[in-house]
Image (cartoon, rainbow, N blue to C red; front, top):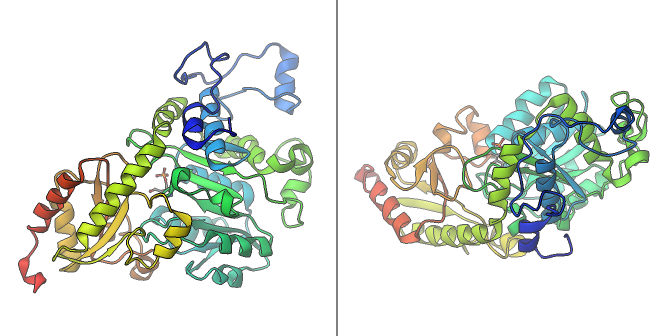
Length: 430
Ligand code: PLP
């Protein structure tokens, strides 16, 4: 299927109707385990002499279709789905890293990821240096002898900085470490990090790929391009005590990492995706391309309109000519810049909180990428646990409102924002 174009793969990749009872829709295989043909078959599956289903924490036929489809859409060799975006990132990092290892990461991240890297992983002895991603050389400068990964979000949430992925991937290549890109906000419909040098792509499927706000999920997609035998990753070139002496690099070649994610990562950390959620996510994935076009069109229209509103002090959307990321957006996101728009309101923290309280169509909640429009005031919610310096570095100011612009009629969305703006204290406007 991967020779087909994006929208064809989004609808068909991975689903062979001749082996799934002829079902046109992808069926849900709601089974925890799979009957072995006989004892030899069971032994062969466990020793990897044969590939096949053992237990749904490790593999499942519905999940397998989603995995094949995501790999085709991102241009990777294989993928593993997980219980959430956070589950996917955690699993990828814990398969790759051990106590004493180090990550160089962009500081422009989703708040939960920032906490994982800055608070939780250090408790396990895995540390991170955060760098300003606007200068790709900062990544190379922060590399240490024990660095084992460079991590970024292709389109930072909520800073909306479009990174120069090609230049950052060159830094990772020089450091001989994998370049891991969270592509949640852009999605492969707008940007394919592997084409720009990413070795591993992470997704929260919870957002645009599901699209309806009905199921959490995550994915790890392997480009199959990283050289695990470069001397820095003995876990892949020496016998694994976690899988009866298997040497991943010798046995699985370019698929060494993604195989280890499935065999050891899902087995030991258990962040597997429910097949029911995989089914829900597949329904969304089928229409991803058209939704991302409409999200982007609506978001740009709202961003342009916000620039003219007296209550608004600044607007950030990479598709705006006024954006400092416009040149990168033209290079990396020429077909649209996704749904998130951030803006500052006069009157700061209190005005921003009030507006978030007063919209009627925009729902006040902590999510992005739903077909419905969403609003949040990060400083009092998602980023509340970060101190001022950490808030600042992740791009969150006190006056910032984040919108995820949905697929409603854009005139209705403007009317909704206008009536919410009308409720703030007028003295701040003068
Ligand atoms: N990555 C990004 C860019 C996100 O915005 C989020 C959640 O908001 C995540 C990862 C985590 O995803 P999940 O909520 O599915 O764990």
